[in-house]
Image (cartoon, rainbow, N blue to C red; front, side):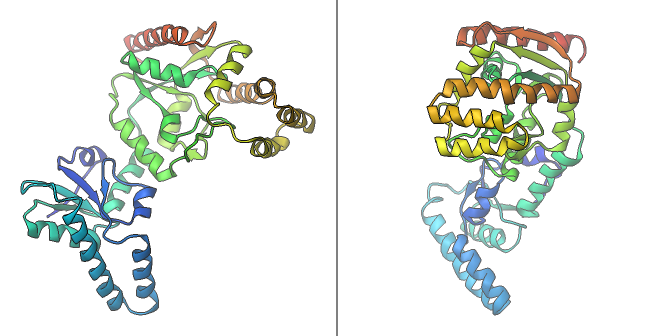
Length: 355
């Protein structure tokens, strides 16, 4: 039986015991339905080989070779990964378009006696639902932005606010990036499609009747673009402004970025790219601090000469006004927990006013 889904939420609530993506590992790594396991019936090399034969030799030869590979790989999955399942197991299978790969695998599972079904349209049908949500539909959420200069511990504040029971959308966590020039993480960012899948999943778990706190960002988090449906809400959202001294922000920045700062040569190359935006004298000063190994001095210089001016310019362009301000005397955990309580009170106050 072929299963169709009319909405993204219906797909998330599919109700099957296991969802199986039978595409190649490379396809799966680019993006997949949340919670799916990858049991490829053609690996990366096999898929490329079948495709080449299809184009250069014969569709018939490609299908014959592909069928042999598919059933050989499927048999291995049944003997190994799927050996634990009893007769009542209900898997849901998909491939790229819901065609030969998922159809063959589903047929084999059904012949064993498992109540297997496949997704109509495969991954592409899922991707269309994600695209519709993030690029076409009006999102129903009521966002409140957590705003402030770089280094004001906004990401940590989001975590504390979430621990207190408020709704939070962590864009930097979903994008695996701290959202600034030097905000790269040890692991690479997900691709755009995978980021959007994670984002759609996070949004679907939110209650539209309650405010959602999200860190103020530009239209990109690292190299990942914030989709237009969400970005339009963010531009209109009220803001809670967080502030701290430059000294505290520099100390926090050095602590937070200690696991992600590139080596001196790479850091210099990154800063060289800013000559078009900052004067040669300013960039030369940064490079001298790197040569001296003065990371504290570099952090302060970047704050005062790059991050803070960029922040002020951005806020002028948006015309953003703060509905509340939170002044942090320092950025230790106790202070952040207290600030999170204040932020939660602000969110509750906005909700009580009908926001």
